[in-house]
Image 1 (spheres, rainbow, N blue to C red):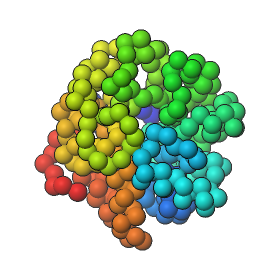
Image 2: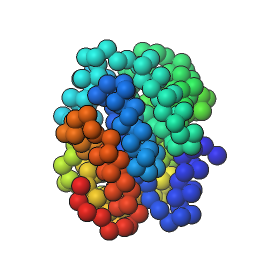
Image 3: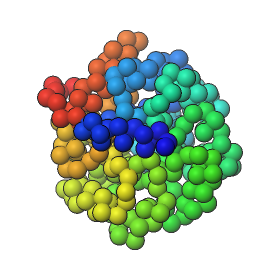
Image 4: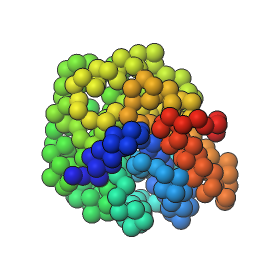
Length: 271
């Protein structure tokens, strides 16, 4: 049983939901990025979603775009990201680690080599944000051969034919986009999100985790009430790190703890 399957099975048995924090590897620098991820682990994160910086992150809003720009400007590259993933894995042997990347990053290294390298570093899944499932067969095969779960996105525009393709390709979990557009901490969601979750649930036998704008405990609870198995938060965490300065660790840990409590249905205060 892979780490995703084991972790989500344990959550189901305990009647709990997933909170998955996101950050860009190398932000704000290597040492502080590791410290921020350690704070996420201390805050009870269910899994981790980590981005490899790319020059044209078309799915991301201004907060993550700026973090990505800062990482690239520092000279932090894919090799550095892999080394940092390995450090994270040393700190937690069991937590699922997913990567959010763009197709050029994989193609530049070669799919077989890229997936072998991320597996060796300790990652469990890869979501290629700009790769549609209709063109993903080769990448999916290479990922599976390396022991990496291919993760895919579902949006309110995903039709029945694409859901069927995803059912054949996806592993780990489905990343359900809460709204059309880009990432960001603004909490407005598509009014068809419940229907999107229901359609995906009927076809794909994987946990459904919602991202894009899920930046507050109230938003997290709302996603769970609509039928999500968990939520993913990134922009808000990067905002917290920037605002807190050098002493960001306790703020990140408390945010993660509060969001995990929210998805588990406990009463929480706004963060």
